[in-house]
Image (cartoon, rainbow, N blue to C red; front, top):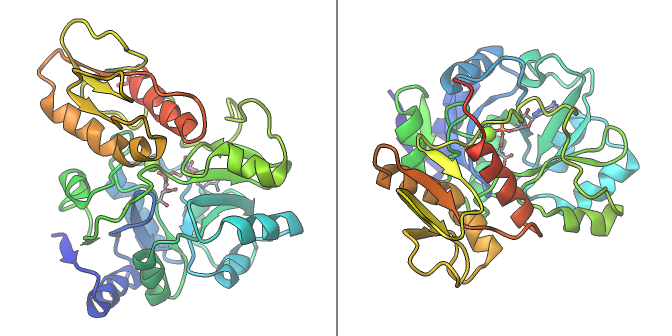
Length: 316
Ligand code: TXA
Ligand code: MG
């Protein structure tokens, strides 16, 4: 059974109590819903992999409620301190060398020496982590390979009965996952996300045309991902055939759904996963979900990355 929680102090405390006992609770962050467990508790971490159907070699991001907690988990060199001071709390995840005395269950990092850390700005997420009293490991709250959840109704659709709790508050305002920046060596973006590359480069200098790793290690970046049931195509600006057509910008007159009719990338990011899910519900057998072009600037890079993975050949 999945218990539902509101965001009152007593409900947050009850949700944290489940997590301290090795249970999994889904909760909102400013990016997407997370599937959280106490990062020191091997039973809780095992339940995350189980509920999500996630391969065991794919590590989890840990979420902290303050910088001190982050510093107890990883080695922060001066550049990491500067980046954290500029972007935290917020939708940026930093990959850093894990401290030997961090106290993390080893499955959190899939046995690796580096840990991915995020200090979310969501007040509900912060309150929940504080109540747990230790970092919360949390992947996005979806079944592995499926559409990321930005609404509790979607979390419930995919995971009801598989998790112990769900904190219901639809405040995933960014709508796209965090940007993952590795600071283990020279700064490199492992996943485009809610902090645009340009914002990081303003602080750190140029990171190359596209620093998305082809061979580098964010093991979760398999090709097919974020996928609805129906087939997805991108850059469809003249729809023909049986499709649910999703527009972007004023040119998308006649579309079935739109990411943003005014062509606003922030709005498109916020809507992306909910629109994918809605399109999937509208699609009849054989229909294709077709997305109009989204420019490759700012948040458009992360949006195009997600569309590319949703459109990638399915391995099953
Ligand atoms: O916005 C977000 O980042 C959301 C919310 C819940 O915080 N979380 C999220 O988690 O998107 P997930 O598990 O869906 O994606 C995390 C990615 C995966 O591709 C994983 O492989 C990578 O981060 N990752 C996590 N820990 C890592 C590590 N130690 N080394 C390399 N990659 C890591
Ligand atoms: Mg995910």
